[in-house]
Length: 177
Image 1 (cartoon, rainbow, N blue to C red):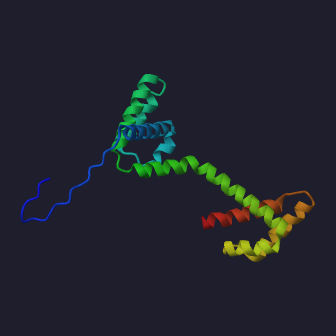
Image 2 (cartoon, rainbow, N blue to C red; image 1 turned 60 degrees about the horizontal axis):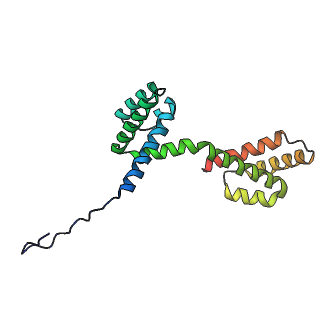
Image 3 (cartoon, rainbow, N blue to C red; image 1 turned 30 degrees about the horizontal axis):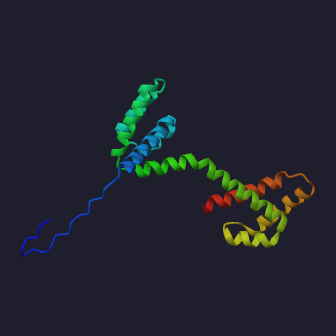
């Protein structure tokens, strides 16, 4: 670019070159995303912030899902439409939450079960640490639930107290998260 006399030099914009491989990878990601959305049920899709074009495309995808070539071409159209969507990050985030929701719940349940077992084994020391971690817990109720669950565990009859302790810990975890 030639500089004009008397004016300050203009800042040139850098041109980003994108390789064909990157373009193909990006197109593949949009195709994968479109396929995931098309495979979802209608109720799940309603929770996604899709624009009108994508909603109509999903209706057509449901109708032609049993015709393989037409369905494949239509998925290509959905991927092309997804490239123009502005809120693609929102859509991806919601899909991630929906697909990983069960895994997150399983991890939380296992964490609570482990805490319950540790509380029954260790007693008051761990009760104090747990109450510091979760201030919404009532110390007296917590001690009583642990004591009842420990009695049941010694009698090798985990039952009501065991379940109540789990539910109490679960409620405390859902309040804080």
